[in-house]
Image 1 (cartoon, rainbow, N blue to C red):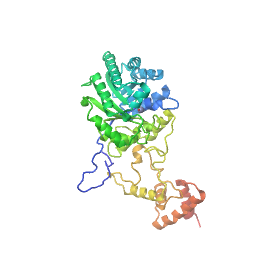
Image 2: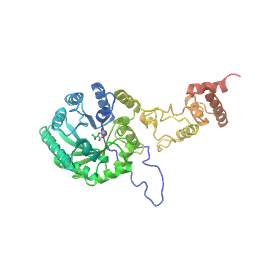
Image 3: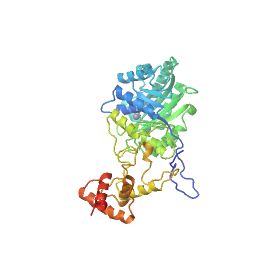
Image 4: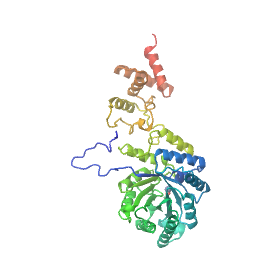
Length: 433
Ligand code: KIV
Ligand code: ZN
């Protein structure tokens, strides 16, 4: 049941249109506690991390990257606490990240053993600049390093059968690497893990630094999707960053190209210009009639928790959540919105002009939609007076009072709230003469 159309009702005679649409929500992975956390001025302390973890669970995330336990004592302790205190619901799988080094891998397994299910996230940079400049390693050397450490993880985890282990392999810098090299590394990991029934692998392809248009990323995903070995035992995941401002678009294109899982952070927190914004992507799907399986029905509460935990403010124009996104200042918009609300009947598709989503679905109200200032027209003014005071103005009166309001707003150079509007109306029409 949805009140949103999957795509605009455009008709192109004789043509199927659009050629592709996203049909279902991806598997979500929140990396707020890892990639999001590592990009903060002051990384979250234990209390803030646990608070955000609980919030992510409440929102419906079934995959949560909980930290980098071999790199941080705080993370190690938090992960152990989550496991030992049974704070992870049965349907939620925690993920822990590590570089490919034996001591780090051993410590990572120690941090999470005993969980019902756990994802160990391996990553190493593979693009040529990193191979040459950062590591001084050849492609065969890197391939052998991946193989060796995945085998080590297999041995270590075989010794802990009480946990259901999943390998995630991320060829970091994927978007800048030769595709053949990416494929070689991914297939090496898949084989070394011996992916098969009950032994899944997640192959996670990042735009570590976003360097191209979303269609280029989609082509890269499509190419990999067609060539990854043991594909039925592999979950194909993407991890977009937002350097060009197109992280969400990259994820959407990647889903059209065969990706099944998406990693990101609430409200786009993350390194530099951020990770993919999970909220925007989820609500984009929602407004296309696809329920994301995440609960944003009280988006202001989610924003409050995120802002308090990260100490980063959310921009007032942030899609869906910003303070101003359900506010119309211009008269023609206000008029159209008022007419859209008046014309709505139960069961209609959502079609209120200028509002891509029903604010009620996010726990927001219509209160701030119409604001009256010197730019406002008579429609918005009439809407507010009718809604808040039950005043129905005849058309000529709307025109006349609209001009009075504009003059008043111009002179005072401020906005008028509903109470001021009513006071002006009373002075103009109800005061004894
Ligand atoms: O952006 C990136 O490449 C990462 C990897 C660890 C997946 O965060
Ligand atoms: Zn990242």
